[in-house]
Length: 111
Image (cartoon, rainbow, N blue to C red):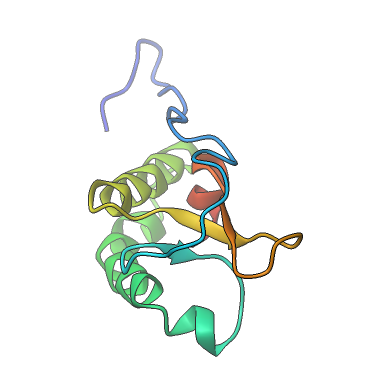
């Protein structure tokens, strides 16, 4: 990770904000769903997400990886999912069966 002058790196840039795209009623196989339970865990996007997380785990957990660098690792993971058409969604509590985008910052923490 290239460092800015002074040895620090800027935080990752937020591209997708919470609620982006409005209410979502149909999921695709690349979507990652936030939550718990068998339906969430077995969604194809969540299965793929866990597999991709394995690819990033070594760098993220390396003791030499600093906190801000970890944020960039998480941002790269989220960008990889999004580049395949995936979204990071949570169920809309007010509209059963509908979902809402959680945005990049929450997605970075969803590992």
